[in-house]
Image (cartoon, rainbow, N blue to C red):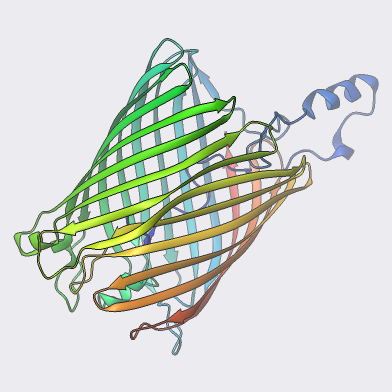
Length: 430
């Protein structure tokens, strides 16, 4: 829920990554049989597949078959440098770090139904500034039961250990100068069905957020522990195959656990209308725009209303290049004692290009913002990044990543800053 929360970083534990680059042409046999093998592994991308998602049989990890389940696992280690750990404009504090992590999943490959577990961990240790060390991890179990081809129900449980980054406006304005760890226990249930051209989906999420006992000028942040119940209703009408108009309704009820914070309890309603386009294999889009409104139990907190946006557009410009645009605008929770929440904005465009069969380069540019109404404050960040990944073989991949953040605008006493982060990482996978 919190935009300032730092999610587990690469190698993106629960998203398919391009991992590494494959065997070079010079290493392939030159006989006729080798030529045929080469044609077999250089498969034509499936219609609509992006550069990052497509199959590369010669360099993709094969996993391990365990009956009707497949085990996938990977571990990585890397070194890097962050030149502004606190996100300040003066007296910058920088330090090098070592980062290591692992992920694993065991998922069924049944033709119907699904059952699986996933887990991942990322640990960062700084050479000199130990107060900034952090460890994020999560583990989940999930399942889906199919009633024919059009109806299914699903359930999942996830435990996550995450942290808020010191560069976050929310952390800075809470008077803190170190990562803020917290735990999330999340339960999800839902189902989808289809009636001719109409699809209907309903889901419920219950999440419990628990902060560590980190003291600050506004008190211990654990007083902001809360539970969130979120209900969703989504429907769509497919007027042409692969093209639908959509309508989504959201309701969220927040309850804070400490009686001193009970005036921050709130109820939020949101409605979003949009469309899905996923037809020609070149363009795919899911865009929804609407409005969100939040009311608080405490009279000192003004009701908060804002446009809401959820957008994702993918363009497979060529067989070797994919462009992706994402945008969001939503209400998030705050750990500041003067306000209960803020509006989070983010938009990003990303390009992925297959330079060679086993070399993938990526670049992205984004803009993020946080808006507070008590007191009135705004911060706008420009974010740029680039990454090169070399898939050495099925098991090994090497990547180099650079990220730059520039807070170009800050009002109401917030401070501007810039930050450079570079990291070299080696990954090994089954």
